Length: 134
Image 1 (cartoon, helix red, strand yellow):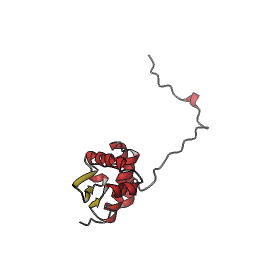
Image 2 (spheres, rainbow, N blue to C red; image 1 turned 180 degrees about the vertical axis):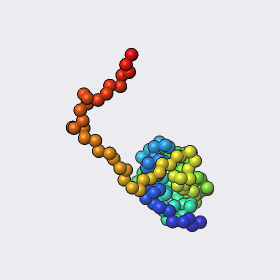
Image 3 (cartoon, one colour; image 1 turned 90 degrees about the vertical axis):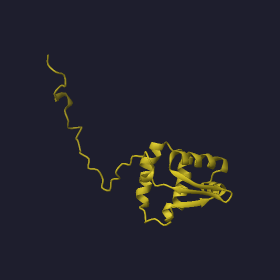
Image 4 (cartoon, rainbow, N blue to C red; image 1 turned 45 degrees about the horizontal axis):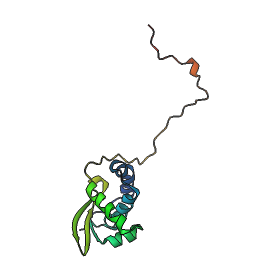
């Protein structure tokens, strides 16, 4: 299945700004998800077939570390397990906007305007007190 072209920069910002903090993804989980995202959705595919050895080699981890990370990502809903056999795993990699329970913030395209305050010129002793009169 082919998908429409996705905006990789927007997905990457949603991944780091929203998905990682809300799902409490570890560094290993981030690496596994990023690797699978790169070889599936960023290639225009919805699903990817892989072996644990391929995934471990691609993320520079051992199979014993990659397997629990894969299970954690499936449990959190970032991946959907389609098939698990001797030929390999088939998973559907979900984009951050497709994961249930993740609230996405709006990505700013323009820089935020900041107001400038001159603290050196401000006389803090002349300000009105916040205490109320009896």
